[in-house]
Amino acid sequence: MSSKRTPLFIAALAVVLLAGLFYYTYQSGKPKFDWSDSWSKDAYKETNAEPYGTQVVHRLLEKYFPEKKLTDIQKNIAEELPLDSTGSSNYVFVGEALYMDSLSTERLLQFVQAGNTAFLASKTVPFDLMFKMYYHECPEAEWNDYSSYFDTTARMTLREPKSATDGSFIFHYARQNQPQPYNWHFIGGQYFCDSLPHHPLGYLNDSLINFARYPFGKGHFLLHTNPLVFSNYSLLRAETRPYVEGVLSWLPEGNIYWDAVSRVPEAIARRRNRSAARTLDEEHPLTYILKQPSLAWAWYLLAGLAVTWLFFRAKRRQRIIPVLPKNENSSYEFISTIANLHFKEKNYQGLCIQSMKLFITQVRERYNLLAHLEPETLKLHVDSDFLRRLAAVSEVPESQIRDIFTQYTATVQYQPTEEMMVNLHLAMEQFWKKAR
Image 1 (spheres, rainbow, N blue to C red):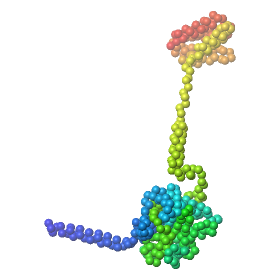
Image 2: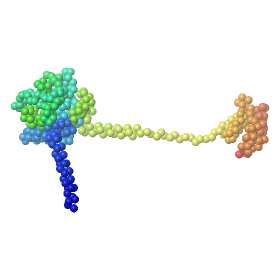
Image 3: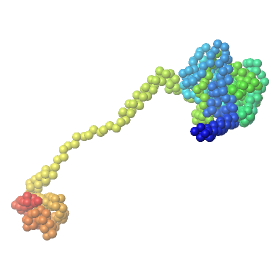
Image 4: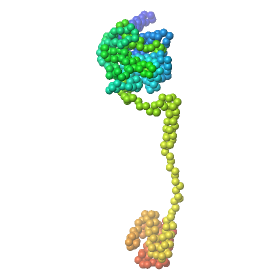
């Protein structure tokens, strides 16, 4: 039994060894690090230890100011960023681009206006935020986002450094430690003029502004156009780390609030900027109402009640059904009136004609037999076939029917008497009594 299992054991061992060799070869062929700077690969994320994560700068800021703390904003800026009036706190964002709703934007503006500092290192900046910072524009320089140029390296310098940092620093974008072309962003010089307090703090290739300070209220916005500078890769290079320290030296001593929730891809932020109306919002009463929570809730409640009222008011109402009078057959009254009129005037011929019209109408409706009465001469045209068919369907003798039409013909040809009229009426009455 043991000898039979030996080949099977050897085959299983060979499969395991081959699988292990294949896995080792596959793993050894994979790059040691993920060099992607894509948002989908967690680029610029504070927990990412890859080359283009921000774990190093995040840890640096944790101990940057003694006895101060760093807080990660994980849910919403509007809820977690305090309205600190001491003017000694810092908001920090590092990423491709940032997205903030209206409440978060307003909270950040209030935070800076109170005397705090907001540091944004991104490839683009939200238009609705920039419109507030760049409210008073330079002549013929409407804000149109950052510009960029394409190259493998970039030389960066700091103007009036607050630390001992001086000189220029060479940065490059790399994959597998090999330099690759990259879009280096900068702020156009047309957005800076003597009439505005905006102040350049750093340059790209000596002339392009990539780091600037924008006063707002009692505080400042610090904008840096190349978040790549603050990646793990740049901070771990001894030749570029002093530049990062020089940029961070513009942060005043105080608590730091690290934005870990507003990071989005650059393409999404730029698409949102393009779709925005690139003009300053006009102030109107509703703007103030919506900024005040109590007034905003009152406005929403009023609008909701109005919509509810319109909904029920607009429902189709059933029209009131009128009370219709009872249908009454007035033919008898009409005939009686006409007959009385003719009888009072002794117009016996008229009565005979009306009686015959009524008679042939009833015959037509009841037996579907048509007798023609000339409108001018009032003569009645009936043939033997008509008399025979009427006698058959009514079961009244043909002679009796012929007698009715004979009496009528006499009343038309001659001036009838009252007796002739009565006889014609009785003949018709006898017909209907016998008719089936």
